[in-house]
Length: 137
Image (cartoon, rainbow, N blue to C red; front, side):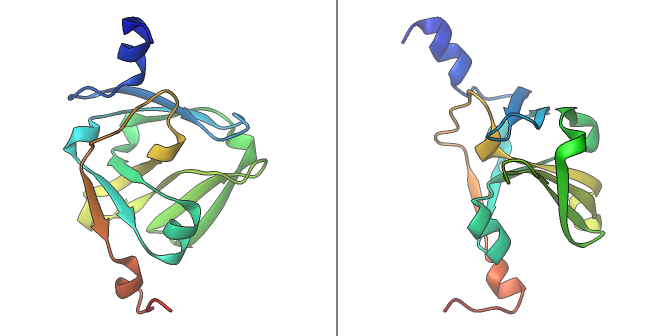
């Protein structure tokens, strides 16, 4: 691998713009963030089954570039809307309003980033099963 390719595919500390997409590329986005500031994984049913690995950003740091017409919405409340591609089924991002997150937010599925190596990025694990009152069976 050349140095140019290696610089393009590795994550360096500090904020930068990342591009991402669903599998079929109908939904494409870009977001500005610093993954070294920390990311999150939850074990609730929906996050575990969709392999969600997220980072929270302000809505102004997220830009949907293509695919609004193919976005589905899985929401449990106004606090959060999980947006997925109705063509390939991939859960790409979420948005909502939660006071504990500073109000309006977007959450980017880091598994949907294109050309990003996030090896070693800090991850905070959340026990969503406990919070929802469900136990592991």
